[in-house]
Every structure is written in structure tokens, then in C-alpha cells.
Image 1 (tube, helix red, strand yellow):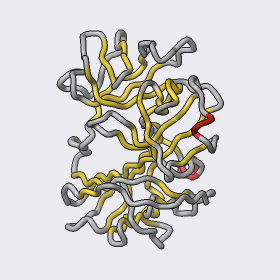
Image 2 (cartoon, rainbow, N blue to C red):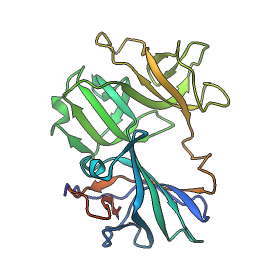
Image 3 (cartoon, helix red, strand yellow):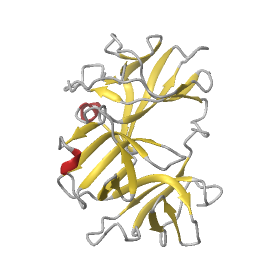
Length: 273
């Protein structure tokens, strides 16, 4: 088990109710049932042998999920949810990172030119003191994006000691042109990649997720290029899977048992999954 101290999320909004619901999970009280997600002590979503797990869109096993550690921003797709959204079955659990790439500044700490905010609850993996980080260190960041400021509120930051196959960035598009755009202070060259899930195109104001090949010569002044994937995101879950509606309860994973019990379970901040 890898516990961290819980904190209360700044906002918690239930958007709508139906037989199935997509949740951006957050929690307010530790659950006691090791086979369920319990939200605010009154909404219980069961984990079953059919529950699937993803990390940054890639399927992973329950055993792999158990090794990820705490702090991830997480989405849960649940079914059999009655009026009141107080129970159901978790069909899919998605762990997501907002950024993966080199440190571009240390004051404020920034990754791919995206400033981060850290709190006492931010989970640090691979290091213990953010002041020891230097420009060029490779970090992976999970958390929440402030759409107004462009700052990432980091719930988890991992220092990666081995090169990764790709860099990742999620954010809001500005300064869009036919061949590129910006995410915050990071210029992006989208030449050679075909955007997906972008009915309006890659235009100012839309949210995108991109993956790019690592560039050993990259600096904070570099244009991020060599994109291998680019698709639009709906931060409000405006297009949930067929037969579902959305609910939003922001939060992060506070603990992961290792090994995962059978049926699999782990805990979110004030939520056990």
C-alpha cells in the first residue's frame, strides 16, 4: 500500500444521471469495501473481473494498475447506475497524464513550457525534493489543467530515469495556423500528422492531446515537432460512449495495494476502487 494524506477537491459537480455514467473521479471519504469505488460515502461502484484498465489510452492489466502508485488523475466508466448515481459497476478505469517530457524551467517548475503548481499532496515518484530538479530532467505529470491560466495542478510527478518512446502534452490550442499552433508557451509544428476526433479542426480554443518523438536537441525555445499523434479532447466529456451520460467528481488516487486483490481494488483520494 502506498498511502498519501487526503485533501478535499476544490469542486465536485454532478452533471447528469442515467443508467450509465462516465466519472472524472474525486473522493471525499475513505471507503471500506475493498471491491468497490465509494464516493463521498454514498455512491458505490463495484469493481468486477470484467473491469478494464488503461494508462494514457493503452490497455493495461489489473496487476500493472496496482504498480502505478498513487496520485493519478482518473476516469471511471460505470454502468447500471440508477437515478441518484449512487451505485453501479465500474466498467473501465483510465489513468491519465497531462504531460511527459523535459523540464524547461525550474521557477516555476515547467514541463514542455507548461507551468506546474505543486501542493503538499502532490505525489513525487523517483525524487523527494522538487528543488533538486534541473532543466532537461524527464518528468511525467498527472493532474488537472486550469483552462483560464494554462497551469497544470500536479497531483503526481514522476522523474523518469530512462528515455521514453514519446513525449506527451494535453492543453488548449492558441495561435492556430495551417501547420501548427501553440499550447501555452510551447509552439507546436503539426506538419505530417493527421488530427483525429477534431470535427471543427485544430482551431483556437479546442483541447488537444499530442504525442511526439523525443528530440535530444530540444530546449525551451524549440518548436515541438515530429508529432506521431494528435487528437482533440472534450474536457467536459461532451461525447460519452453510447448509452452513457456524464458526471464529474474531481480527485486523485490516494493509495494502491500491491498486489491488487481479487477482484481488483485500489483507492482514490477518499475513494476506494
